[in-house]
Amino acid sequence: MSNELDLRQYMAIIKKRLALIIIFVFICTAAAAVVSLFFKDPIYEASTKIIVNQTTTQMATGQLDLNQINSNIKMIDTYKEIIKTPAILDKVASQYAELGLTAEELSRKITVSSVNNTQVMTLIVQDVDYKQAAQVVNAVSNVFREEIQHIFKVENVSILNEAVVNAEPSPVAPNVPLNIAIAFVVSLMIAVGITFLLEYMDDTIKTEADVLQYLGQPTLAMISRMNTEDADSNQKRSANQTYKAGELERVSIEK
Image (tube, rainbow, N blue to C red; front, top):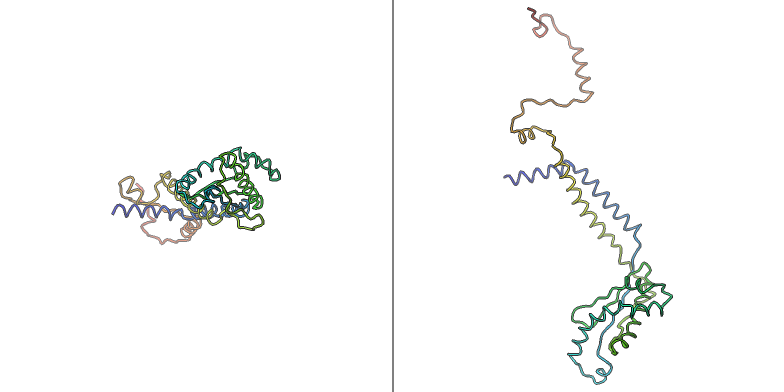
């Protein structure tokens, strides 16, 4: 029974400041929507896929070497690190000067990922200009394919697909629905927290139930609050009231 009573108290607290919660959540959600739609630049994504395959000699013999495949899979992690090193990116910056990016800037833009137990790597570049992103990811892929032959003396890296420069994809960010949903949930949690904080800090006694709860004493009398109109009305009623002679309430006894 006590748990039910506690739940009712919580609901009463929320109901008492429901207007505050609604206004706070509405403002935060609307602000997130406005920022996402009008102040955030759209971000586009371009990607290429690179496969670490058998060497030219192995492909010529037509033999499938499982040990070599496993070795290629393990080399993926090494290749992922090499792609973002100056050995590759310095050459991209010098060979593709029209991109206007340094090796450090290229490193911040590039994301390299792979699926476990596969020989495929995915290079991803995000930029506010899709054409720029596509040119960057294609340049990095081509330079890596050329330079890895000199670094490891292997010819087992091929590009499966390049990014289409003239494509018109949809932006990947900002995700407006997701941002609005996050803003709604977070602002609701904050608003409810503020509501309970205000209730916790409010130590005034307002009702008969508060007197009984905090003082353990019943309420003997209660003075209600009157507005100005009610007070003026009572004064006029008292002034206009007539009394008859002999009424006991008008008699005073002097000693």
